[in-house]
Length: 383
Image (cartoon, rainbow, N blue to C red):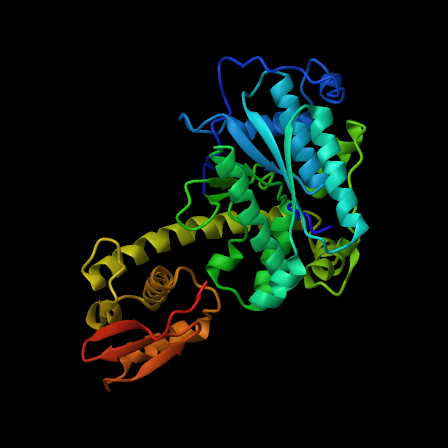
């Protein structure tokens, strides 16, 4: 199965901490939840530590937990359930599962299993299906990209329908290491090498927050061990062993090789990603200020930029500002590559006016005298 688990200094997650706990009706099938001992498990204590890093604020008491059925997402659900039963957090959990229909009966069995687990724990479950293969054909994405987009759109709908301000996914340090290595192989810049963000908006312009509370401390061995300690099985996705997928080869070949050089490689690369994300946040803020100055507007969304102000900035800031400018007009940076940004940068430096750069999705960037312009050529999806 394509698992939902496998992206700041002081991550901010949903407002889980509370002094009092609502009384919830017990479920006759919630036998798993009632087996927890008086003291918290080590896994639950670590998860609680992440909750205690929250800032105060009332963001509602319903959270959506994405559960694929794999060890990581099942462990997250069990850990949250343990904290709820122990009175350590006060939330209503909604379990969300999207059946990708990629493996026939096995996909259907995963969906039934997740619903059964949620019922046994006494939580609501929302189970839906989607034709990911058809989506991939239509969008020209690969299966992994199409599945990811489908999942987050589904999670957004579930959160909105249940008035939940937060969606939690179970990405671990292993997922972080795999993602960073994949981005390095593909030639990503600092943003890509910063890996998965622990906290971000679920979708552009969305008030729903996506949080990954296992990302900074849990590894796959931890989630598998925790599930076994609770006598709860988890689902195995045979696609996670299919080495036709680059991520699987990174997981099964590259990471074990790197561990021979550094047994703590996963922890090391996760720490490096945190440093790069902090640096990127500072650079992004400086680039936004440059964009505001060059556009003459506080939101940097003007379709015209002064080239003289862009040219005096360091290249690293100038390119970030250009990416922000393109993203603001296109609704994202999908299909925008480094070569496009470099080409626009060359426009700024060219002594000739009137030259243009054609952009994916039907848009043009061109320079006229001392001004850089953005122009849509047609109505087309550019995200």
